Length: 230
Ligand code: ADP
Ligand code: ADP
Image (tube, rainbow, N blue to C red; front, side, top):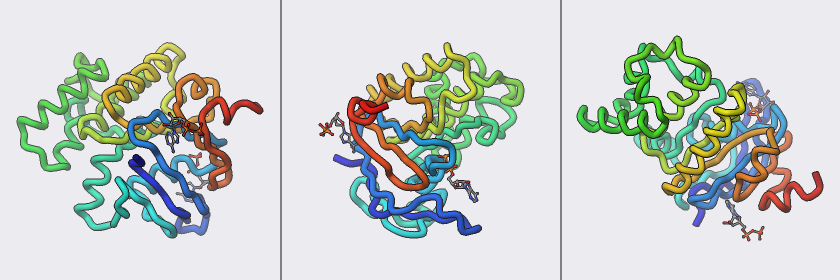
């Protein structure tokens, strides 16, 4: 049962940079998946293309076996279900305080007010930052901002969560807590797709690994297969 699948996916930026080329991949629902590859391999572009922020310039994307379409309503639904947590929380966080920040997604989805509050409080509790509710986002530590940016996404109750280099720029303790937290989300049924160039973190964590290189799929398999020749 694949939640997301692509066939010969391509994406070129307006300046002509071909960031994705002939990518055919499939994500099994409910798994912990890692995308590894050096900087510039196309990992971020892949995430943005799979959740409709970038429009594919070639090939097909399927969500639950249905080709995705780029209508306004369909895109809103896709972005609700496929959340991206960006590498740098500063580009994601823009509201005055934490509660408002995490409310943004649910408001955008048109949820009724009482439900918004419930979803926000749930997301804050899960990420262990209820105590930050009324704090200005601007003055939080890097690790706290990371948690807010994850709560942002959780408040929309996505089925799939893309985490772009989630442990870059966080201290080792926070990094370990985050990896454990992603396990917890996975146990609750969410499909977790994490990009990284930190192979040591991925090996014990991932169910399945995709290796990207120069915008293409270089290899895929279980960690034991992928890393046997490292
Ligand atoms: P292999 O034959 O390469 O060992 P298996 O089909 O035995 O692969 O699967 C091994 C593990 O990897 C299983 O947990 C399976 O669910 C997972 N897996 C296989 N393919 C994918 C995929 N495309 N996306 C996510 N997980 C996958
Ligand atoms: P990764 O996440 O693996 O580091 P990216 O998806 O960020 O890779 O980048 C893939 C390729 O696309 C790189 O060659 C990068 O320079 C290029 N790229 C990324 N963003 C843009 C952009 N806005 N305009 C043009 N090229 C871009």
